[in-house]
Image (tube, rainbow, N blue to C red; front, side, top):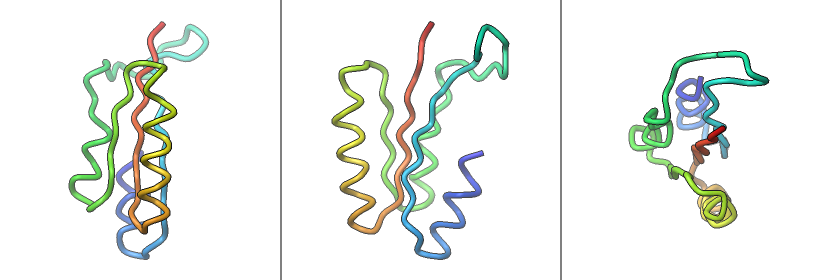
Length: 85
């Protein structure tokens, strides 16, 4: 669950970059029915952090670079990567 690390980081000042792979299934086995609409990146709105949503593979490097820059600047970050297939 992303909320607990985000809250702990906000309270302690620890820098956090969370890369969330938004899978509903793994190895053909249904893990959860989250759908691709779950906006994990929005958790950062409540924790003064940076959130990014990545839907295309080509957008991932830039999103990771922006998130890492924010973490180096003292914020926490969540990159929500939507995986299809």
